[in-house]
Length: 391
Image (cartoon, rainbow, N blue to C red; front, side, top):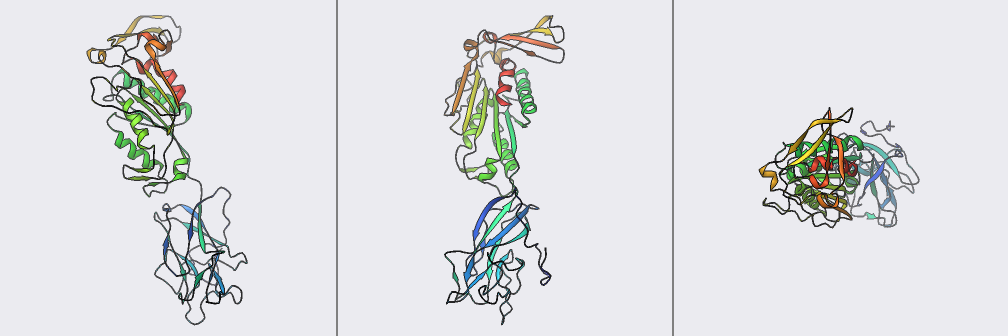
C-alpha cells in the first residue's frame, strides 16, 4: 500500500515477498551517505521486492535509526526537525536529500521493511539520507542493508548443433534431423550453425541466457540452463571447442562468465580431427558431463543403404548409395577428452555387425551395418543412437 502522508512515493511499501522469489543480492548501505550500487542489473520491466533492514547510529552517543525512521528508540522521526531532511535509505535518487523517492512504510520494531520495485535495465543506487553525517556510525551488530528479491531465472533447455562443411548434403541433412528429433523428444530449443560459426553461436547462446541483459552471466543464470551440443565432421570440432570456451570463468564473446557453464551431453559424429583438413580440436574438458563420439576410420568411397517400404517392410527393389571422391578421403577420429563420462565408438569395428534400421524418408526405411558406413552415411547410421543420448 502507499503511505497517505507522503503522496510522492513511487513504490508500494509493506509488500510480502512471494514464496517463489529468490534472493539475488544483498547490498550494505553505509551511514556516511555514500552512494552504493548493486552488482546486478535489474532487468527492464522485471518485478522485484527490496527488503531493507538494520540500524545505524545517528549520534555520537549511539542513538539508533533505521531504513526509514530517525531516533527509533525515542521519537521515531520521519524527517529531521530543523532541516526537513527525509531520514532513511533512498533508491535511485542519489542527488536528492530533502525528499526520498521511496517511503518504506509504517515503523516496525524489527527494523525490517519491504517495497516493490520495477527494474529499469540498469543497476540500482542506494544511499542514506541524514542532515549531518559526521556524527554517524555503522551499527556493527545489525548494519543497514538492502536485499534484492525476484522471481527465479526461467529455465532453458538448449541443444546447439554444428553442421559439417557447408549446410547441404546427405550427412548434414541427417545432422539436422538428429537435432530436430532430439529437440522434439526432449522439449529442447534447437539452434543450428555452420561449422565456421562458433563465434556467432556463442553470442546467440549468451544473449539467450543473459536474463537481466547486463552482459554478465551470473551463477543463477548458469544454473537455469541445460546445454546439449552436437556436431558432425568439421562441426564435430566446433562443438567440443564451444564447450571448452565455457569450461572456466572469464570473458567470451564480450560477456563476463562468472563460473564454468556445464554441458549435459556432447555428441560428435565423425569429427575430422586428423585428416588433410587443417582444423583441430583438443576435445572436451571437465565441464562436459557426458561425451559420446561416433566415428569410422575407413576410406570407403561408397556406402549403400538398403531400402524397404515404410508400410510393408518389403524390399524397395533398389538401394541408395552415398559417397564421392571427396568423402572417400574423410574419416572420423577418437578425441582426447577430460569429460566426466566418455563413450567413443569406432563404428566400423566396434559396431561392425550392429544394424541401423529406421526411416529414410516418408515412404522408405533403410538398413545399414556399421562395417559399411562412410563419412556421408555416418549421421544417418547414428540417428537413433545420437537422438537417445541427446533427448
